[in-house]
Length: 133
Image 1: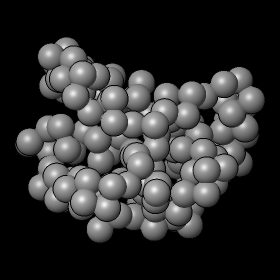
Image 2: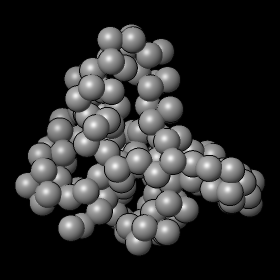
Image 3: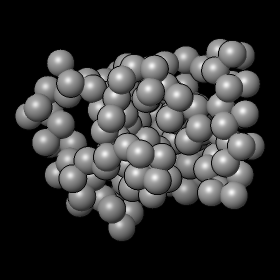
């Protein structure tokens, strides 16, 4: 089974019809379903997505995400070792503007052998990953 990393930018776009990338996210998600791709993410992406949804859309959107889409995700839980490695990477690449969440995502992608990201964040491409079309 092929694995694709799911980023906050894609999850939020899929869930929020007014997001500029909503249509692209929905079409990509349909393609992922057809491919039967396993969606991998991190606990940091979940936290970031929950916070963004709550702040911009409301708590009901968080409930819908938690009940409907979150169960479809294979979550890599960030422990202290991954957190520290991600922080090191984020600090090392501070000029490129990657966040701690992105750095943890990149490390998980590498450890899982994932080369493709469902994301609308340019940092994935600059880190050497391909973006889902």
